[in-house]
Image 1 (cartoon, rainbow, N blue to C red):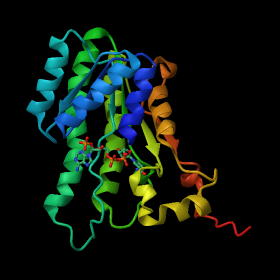
Image 2 (image 1 turned 120 degrees about the vertical axis):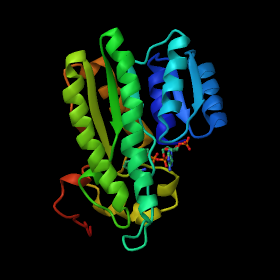
Image 3 (image 1 turned 90 degrees about the vertical axis):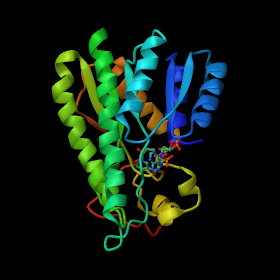
Length: 243
Ligand SMILES: NC(=O)c1ccc[n+]([C@@H]2O[C@H](COP(=O)([O-])OP(=O)(O)OC[C@H]3O[C@@H](n4cnc5c(N)ncnc54)[C@H](OP(=O)(O)O)[C@@H]3O)[C@@H](O)[C@H]2O)c1
């Protein structure tokens, strides 16, 4: 299970047809098949090439040829740029994160928005991060990319509002992924000591927030940020409760 699958499941439960992307065509196709069978929706998986506009155009063209039009796009995939030490990281690796998390999302959002414009509206949801505001160690390009993606989200919301296309962002803090399970960056310790609500996010929490921003429930909301981090970001500094 991962965040993307959690989001896809939520939309399938709500009766949405799904078009799923992964760098692995096999994974995307298998996941689409499973979700289609379980939820009785149409689902198709695509193998995606990162930061390749032709590939993006081909995929959206295929969706159209199948007789569908994208009315909600959730941008979850990210290059996490883990362990990029400031003095060691190559400019290529730095730019790879920026290109993936900003440039690729721009390409995907633009093709989706073209389809949404044709049908009179839609919703784009960025899965961003509270690292857009709060830096974490050895993640210089990732933090920069998430701040940049937030600016892009607001600019897109402004440009696309007149087409009734809403653009918003979910800002998770820590999510219970395999990395969390392996206690990367002392995640478990951070959970018990530093999170005001006493727990970090499950996939369902992120999926529910994506669903809210992606569906008509938030039909008068655009350019907004929904923080889902158990309250971590509201603190000036973490308070360790000794009791
Ligand atoms: N985990 C957290 O604690 C946390 C906290 C705040 C925000 N977020 C955000 O939430 C979203 C999901 O996070 P996650 O932790 O669940 O991430 P993840 O599973 O590690 O990554 C999400 C997906 O992105 C794709 N991906 C991974 N590396 C990539 C790369 N170098 N280039 C292109 N695609 C890549 C992978 O899909 P394929 O292998 O299928 O291509 C992966 O399943 C991300 O946008 C992340 O920034 C996560």
